[in-house]
Amino acid sequence: MKNLDNIDLINSKNFDSTALEIFKYQFQNNEIYKKYCEQLNVKVETINSINKIPFLPISFFKTTEVLSTKNEIEKVFISSGTTGNESYHHISDLKLYEKSIKLCFNNHYGNSSNYAFLGVTPKPMEKPNSSLIYMIDYLIKNSVYNESSFCENADELNDKSLFFEKNNIKYIIYGLSYALLDLLEKSSFSFKKAIIVETGGMKGKRKEISKKELHKLFASGFGTKKINSEYGMTELLSQSYSNSDLNFKTPKTKKLLIRDINDPFKLSNFGRGPINIIDLSNINSCSFIATDDYGLIKQNGFELLGRLDESDLRGCNQMLIQY
Image 1: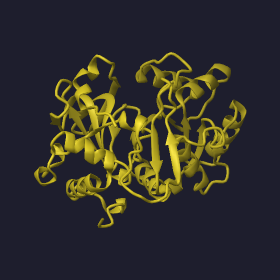
Image 2 (image 1 turned 90 degrees about the vertical axis):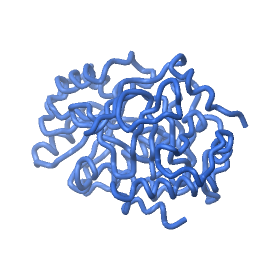
Image 3 (image 1 turned 60 degrees about the vertical axis):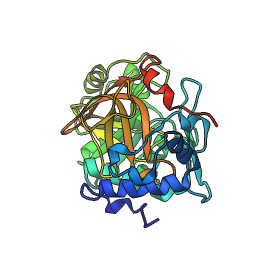
């Protein structure tokens, strides 16, 4: 492996060639992915563009260890499992994940050292296997502002936010959607300088509502127009962020493709449909994932439109194989 995990060197000019190198590496070193490719009769020498690379259905993370390395596992991230069927991502290099966290943040917001961070989520000790909580904890611990922290209640959030506002410190509040709504039911806030980053989903705690409606509630309740979103998942080490326009941008390590709903091997660079993701930070697991998310890829970013239901997945069922 030619130092393929040096994600700082990835850019638009070398993304495709790096992705092809990683495909070859993972084909040789990832037993699950190799078997999947072989069942599709894929020949490595015929893969000469990223659109020809096979994408592993994300459901494999629920049933198998998806690994491209024999190095010792440092941590296992586990999804929230609101449907009772969790995904597991075995991490052999936490430093690589931390590097990806910083790269993805800096790509959207600029240098993370210029910000303070507050978390309206469970603390790491409460959710030790959450990749999202690990990300927020990493940003808090590496903040130059000692006031950065997880907030247990509305008073703590209010006090620390007003301190940042008064001292003209740029700050970001990461919050689970249901946790932010819980706070708004108890208190009202006026955080004119805050950037609120909702991290998606009600996790079964509340009825799901549209992003547009959710952002409207947050803007009114927190007193700021800067309501952003983070798009990440247990199975991926790279995150995407959107501004208030709900248009997500991808970092340098990540690329999205759209697959045809009836032909999962037909891919497009733009359009509407199920999302495939190339995440080059996933060098030690699998960088080519066919997700269950539905979206719209445009020239200047992408929108999330929802999740696929069972009927939508009919065209993907043929991809699943048993071990």
